[in-house]
Image (cartoon, rainbow, N blue to C red; front, side):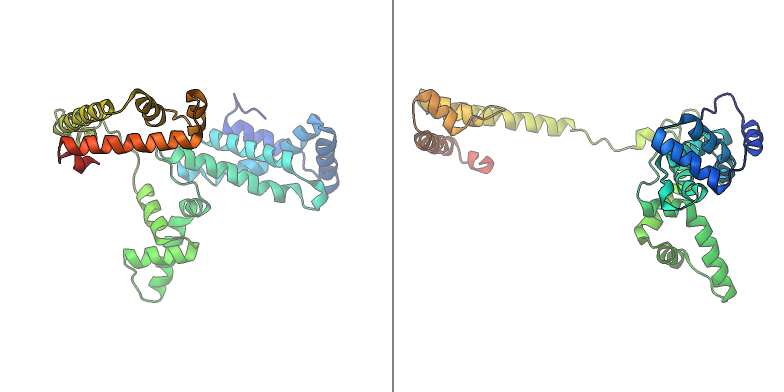
Length: 291
């Protein structure tokens, strides 16, 4: 059901004028859609329950989302419910649709609350929509007992009440405590103030570290070249194909090319590595640090 071109008042008026379905008519329409894919039956079923979708969407206005967008998401949930509804289960469609409508609206609210993903698990979703209510309830009950809860005690009781971890409660409090800010915003009202992005730690390789890495790599390459020169042509070929390729070859494939058995190629490879190690150890004690 497309909502383009309609505001929430128009949609509300149209929904309030829609027919009220009795159980028998509702069941007949559900069967017509499920068994015959009758689109007119689907449209009639969805239209009749748009008032339910709009009513549920209105409950989420406090999260700051535009009402037309909430109605759009509610209608999507309603249509998904109509598509998946099984009339053989003996449940009224409105009872079944409530879950899908609520889930669709909640997903939309959480996606648009912040540029940072607010939460994806069921526990995080429960916290997002219930944290403030549960906190107020617990503080009210504590006040009636003449107690004052500190923040740690309150978080612990919220975690127990909602059935989530303390870490989840602390994370969601942080997410809900403020809105998004641009990293390009200045840290003060002064136009020449430093931007927040300038305060982020640079995790790229620093100049001194890059020079050291380049120098070490050059030395290692030089030692490797000298070690390879200590091998004969066949041994160099085996080492190169087995260790220096992005896609190393198997002993079997090398044996087929060289006319040798797989075991013989393994022996030649082991002998080549032994020669290379002796060559490297003979060049410098410093090499042993890298081996």
